[in-house]
Length: 253
Image 1: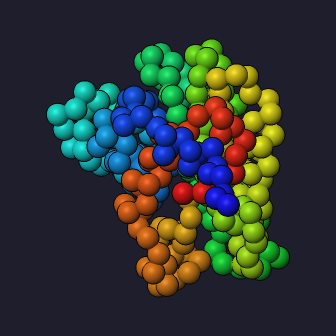
Image 2: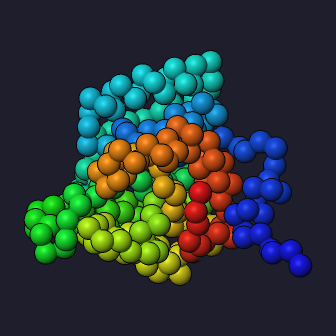
C-alpha cells in the first residue's frame, strides 16, 4: 500500500514545467536563509522585496541580486527597505511603500528571526528574552497585520511563516526560541482559519541548516549540516508551488 503524498508534494510532482513569475517579500533578507532564498528566486526571474535592519548588508545584497538577475526582466524591479519587524510602524511603512509602487507580493516569507544564547531559562537576561519574542512572534504578527489586508484586496496571496523543528519539539538551553516558534505554529494555524478564499498561510520548518543561529547553538558541529545556499533551491521550489490547498499546513523543506 502506498502512502499518499501530502498536498505540497503533490503540487510539486504535478506542477507545471515552469512557474509564473512572482513578487516575493522576504523579511530578514540580509543574511542566512533569507539572503540565500532571495538570490535563488532572483536567479529564476522572480522579483524580490527585501527588508532587514542592516542597511549596509541590504545595499550589498541589492548589488548581488542585480548580478543574479542580469539579463532578466526582473533586474531593476527588486525593492529593499530598512525595516525593523519588531516595530508595527516600520512594517506599516513597508506595506505603504509596496502599495504605492504597485508591487503587491504574491508570496510573503516571514523569515526574520533570532535566538537566545544557550542558557537555562532563568539565566536568560530579560532583554534577550524580549528580543526573541519581539522578533519571532510580534515581528511575524506585524507583517500579517499589515499585509493580509493588502492580499485580501488583491484577492490572492501565500504567506510562509518560518518555523523550526524546535517549534514542534523542545530542547534545553533555547527555551525562549522554542516558545517563540511554537507560538508561530499556533498563530499560523489560527490565522489560517480566518483567511478568506484565495489567501493561504503555512508554517515552514526549514530543517537544520548551517546558519549563524545554528552555530550559536551547535558551535563547530553546525558545519556538519547543509549551507543556506544548498538549501535555497529546494526551499524555493517548495514555496513557489504552494497553493491555497496548503492553508494551515505545518510543512518541512
